[in-house]
Length: 129
Image (cartoon, rainbow, N blue to C red; front, top):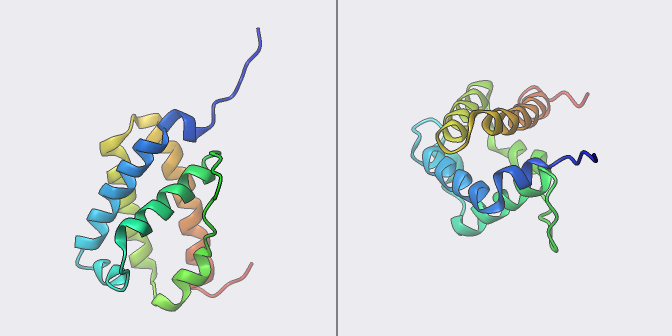
């Protein structure tokens, strides 16, 4: 019997990733602490689509035109602090828990915590290593 691994993108599905991202950004944009970080984005639908595609590819999905995302470059000039990343993660954990089965939510949160840690290291603490 042959065992095949199923990427997280297939377990969650592109449409559910989009739904989670849409709900997540709804929380972020209405959050008193974080909302101002998103005020400059003119086409929010395009932003959400780009972020959804980013997550889909990060989870192992293949797209004909994957998004090019400069995570550090986009976040560096915003003046993000540790408390902002903590709040972002709170919303991320809550949103995935609301929309996904616990195991899938945990896997996605694990990935988000890795990205948050890297942003915290470089963007907040200015440590390149």
